[in-house]
Image (cartoon, rainbow, N blue to C red; front, side, top):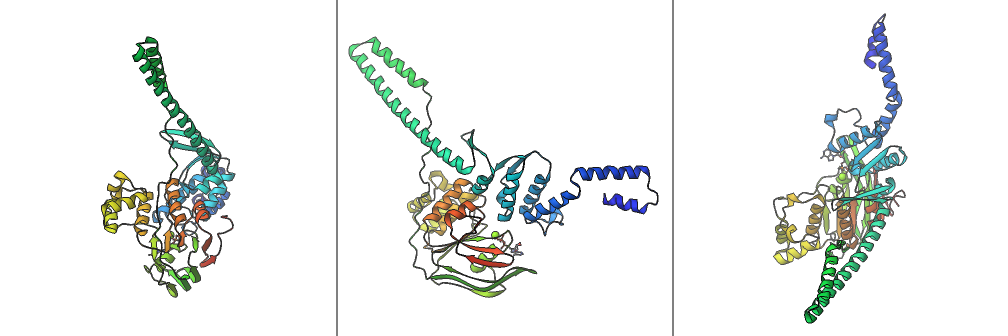
Length: 431
Ligand SMILES: Nc1ncnc2c1ncn2[C@@H]1O[C@H](COP(=O)(O)OP(=O)(O)O)[C@@H](O)[C@H]1O
Ligand SMILES: [Mg+2]
C-alpha cells in the first residue's frame, strides 16, 4: 500500500486503473484489521519478549524466538481453532501469563498439549489423556483431572480385587466339582465344572491398575555441616556487549534456604549461576562461597563427556562395584535393561535423572539447578520434585514452572530491569 501511495503521489493525473487498484488494496488492508492490527502485532510481540527483534529478518533470530513468532502469527490469524503443541516451552513467565490471559478470554476453540500444570489449570476445561492406545477424557482442569484419575484408579483397584477373588473362588469350585465327579463318577458334577469353566473363559478380565508406588527411592546422603552464610554477593555487575544484564547485585544465601530464581528470558539468570560456578567472570563486584559449601550444579544444558557410555558404566566409574552401581541406578528408577542404554539414547527426563544420580553420589549441601524441569513431561517433573523434597540442604533453582516453584520453594531472587532483588517469599502472583 505504501508503494502505491508513493506512485500515486508522483503521478500528476493517476489513471482510473491505478486508483481502483489502490482502493482495492486499501479495502483489503482494512478487512485484515487495518492499522489496529499493527497495534496488536506490536503488543503480542512485546508480551513474548520480541520487542528488540521486531524488525530483524527471520533468518537472524534464535530457535526459541522463532517458536514465539510462530505462536504470535497463529494467535493473530482469524483461525477459529488453535492447535498448540507445548506452547509454554519457549516462553518466560511474562509470555506464559500473556498466553494464559489470551486463552482465558478468546472465543476461539483450542487444543493444547502441555506439561505446564499451572498453565493447564488456568486455561483448559477438559483433559484428554492418551493411555494404552486409548483417549480418555475428563471434565475440568488439570487438578480436577488428577482427582478423577485417582478415584478412577481406586475404583479399578476395587473391581480388580473383587474379580481376582471371584476367579479364585470359581477355580476352587471347579476343582471341588471335578473331585466330586471323580470320586462318585457323577456326570452332573462334570457338567457343573464345565459350566463354571465356560463362565471363567467368558469373563472380561480387568487389567491390574498401575500401583501408585514411588519409582524413585533416592536417599540423599547426609550432608556435611554447612556454615550459616553459604553465598554472599556484593555489588556484582555483568554486561554483555553494551548491555547491562544486572548491576549492583547484593544478596546472601543462608544455609537451608530454598530460593527460586525468576526473570524473563535473557535477563542473565544463567550468567549469574555461571559466575558463581567460576565459569565466566563478572565485570565488577565480589562473591564469596563458604568453604563448607559442597556444590552440586545442574546446568541449563546438560552435557555428558561421552554420550556413547552406557548407564551402568557411568555408575560403575563413580561407585566401583557393579552390584552397588545397579542398586544406585535403581534408586533413580533405572531398572533391568535401562542400565545398558547409552546416554545418547536417553530422553530429556532420563538425562536429568542420570545427572542428578551423579551429583548425589557426593555429599552435597548446596544444590544449584538451572531450569531442571524444562522439556520434561509431568511424570518426570514429579520425580524431580520427589528428589528435591527429600533433599535437606540449600537449594537454588531457575524455573518458570509455577507448580514446581510453589511445591518446593519459599524464597526468591528476581531479575528485573537490570537489578536482582532478594525476597523471603515467592512473588504474590505465584502463590
Ligand atoms: N557468551 C555469550 N556471548 C554473547 N551473549 C551472551 C553470552 N552468554 C549470554 N549471552 C546473552 O546474555 C543474555 C543473558 O543470558 P542468560 O544468562 O543465559 O539469560 P537467562 O536469564 O535466560 O538465563 C542473553 O541475551 C544472552 O543471549
Ligand atoms: Mg537461562
